[in-house]
Amino acid sequence: MRCVKLHHDRLQGLKGRQVPEGMKVCLVLGAKLRPDNSLSPILQLRVRLVSILANAYPDWLFYISGCRADTTVIYRTLVEEYHIPEERFVLDSCGYNTFRSLWDMEMYFQQTRFYILTSSFHIARSVSIARWLGYDAWGIDISDYEKVKTNPYYWREQLAALRSLWLVFCIRTPLGRMTRNFYWKRLLHRLRRNEQQFDAQNEQILQRAMKNVDKSMPLTEYFFRQLMEGGIATSLTQPMDEEHLIVSLSHVDCTTVMEDVLSLALCYRDGRTTLDDLKDYYRRMHYQDGVISFATRNHYFTWIMQSAIKEGFVKRISPDEPVFPFTAVMDLQPSYMTRNKYLFSPQMDDEKNYEAIALRQQQRVRFTYVPRELLGMPQDSELGVIRDGDIMAVVCDQHTWARGVEVKHLLIAKWIDGRLHFYHASSDGLGLSNMDAYTFMKDKFTMIGVAIYRLKDYDAAK
Image 1 (cartoon, rainbow, N blue to C red):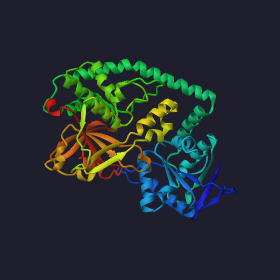
Image 2: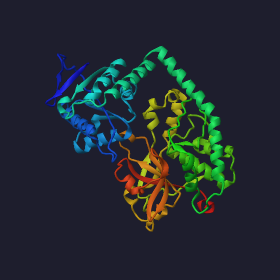
Image 3: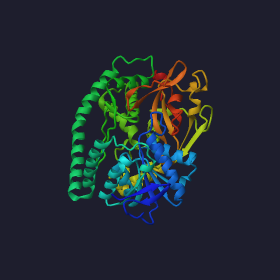
Image 4: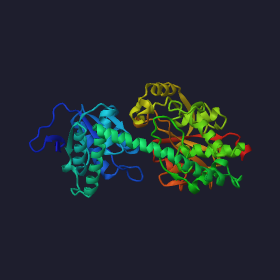
């Protein structure tokens, strides 16, 4: 295995090998955070070692890879606590596993020669994957700094290595690419075939939800609670060469559940209660001017709301200029898709799609929002402008990984005992949160406030 040792805060050759010359890039692999979003012991060690390497080698560049949460926590710790200049870091917030982290180094960052910093139990597999991919990668042996020498992950590593080998085969060989294309075609065929099943489930949920509507609560809250009975929080992807709208009321994420809720509420409000009506409302929110194509899909939540406002479905409660409690302003041009083009392949590989999305992104998005510090105010304060059933779009802090993303999560407001709570779709499913909005957001520094949207003609609908 190609590896060098970190000893006395400097790199040394291992087993007769020389330290490679001219290599100034280090890939730092992430790991899970603690439940309170603080660094786990594994990540604390990696952060400390990055600070050591950054001081020992001032011309190095560090690529921090992982999911959005852990990369952001690592980055902020290094910048704010270790005082390392932020320009020395590049964040890959979509490196959800070792293979993806390494693959992104070439596909997105154009780096094929780098060190890998990870735990000792993980380094062999990481270097092997990099070598299989054809990269000039060197592992850093950090065993001198680790307190625990045993490997409790042995079998996990063996199984993960087999999976990674299969992924390398799929992208590096013609037969593998044929296999992968066959897989996606089969998946597309299954999605199309399951559309009839989705429609049957949608019809059942629609008819059940429209019976005996509880008019004592806002329509958005009522229909969310209806979805709670049969829906599950999941990620329903559509890997299609040509755009095709599939609606599933039983498989949702935090964004699609809001579109589902609004579509159901609009069906009831307007007396249009067929499945075709539901799809029509969904289409008019999900696509610009209701035209179904990848280029016209509303990929950002603010785009969805812009279409919904244009169609007369909802209104934005926050004013254009700061007024208490909407004291903060977000003024940005969403750019996540063009910054991360590789995440949206093959659609973004089409030049027409790319140019259309880039042109739409040039339209600046501006809105005011309630800072999270004010979400702890009671209902009888100015925060009472937020009503039960309002949609709260959690505004995203524009740190490195999040630049180009405007909204991080979506909630439905619910006042309980004078405190602002919420319904949402989370990893635990659909439901009412067991904590208030301020407590939920106060330690999540990427969540900095909420913008408020409301079903139009709220009073009449109520």
